[in-house]
Length: 270
Image (cartoon, rainbow, N blue to C red; front, side, top):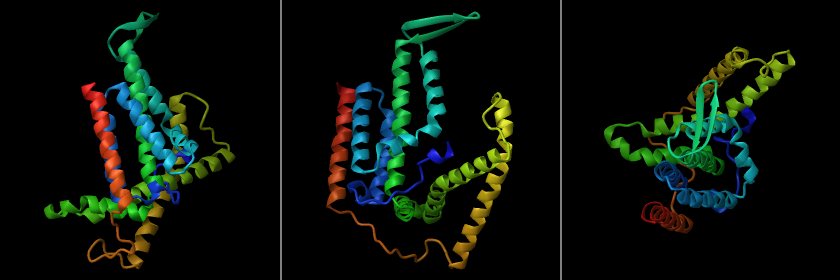
């Protein structure tokens, strides 16, 4: 399961999405997340799905790689869909009585379940596009640039950007470490799959302890490496690559703006 986590990983490439300005991709990702939680019309989600698939194809990264990233979230997605499916009131289309309890599936529940399914799926795929096509250094610079206006009120933009980028970058590293520990524990006879939920939770203790130790060790090594290189944060810091908007970025802004207007028209006017 841990090896299927794609958020935080970066795959080098020469696609149009890879070449877009990191600041623009970060802002568009935030707008995409906001739109996902604002719109409620199925027609709007249809166009959002088509747009996401189009961008994924433009990245030239296999679609299966994005779908693989959904595996760790599969339980949460299914659980959330079922909660909305059975607990949304409305016109009943199916009903079952078990031990005095009544389970009802309504037409509105089916609609809400499909919306939640698409919302969570597009959320994972959309955020994966950002990290898969943006290097950690460029992502750090983009976060700092977006937060730079907050420096007026003494917000440490560079430090926040560095912490966020390191946290994102460490997600696949810790996932890979967890997968190695699970394989090592299974080779010693550990069982993580049999028994009820409580027994499985107890079986995870031999995994969590070495995982936390490894995470703290990596953090200490990173701090030592940064200190030995005289790292002092964002004060007078220069960059090898200066971020600058180009023709492709302006075209992306125009297309995304037109798409947002289209979704708004479909969702609220029609």
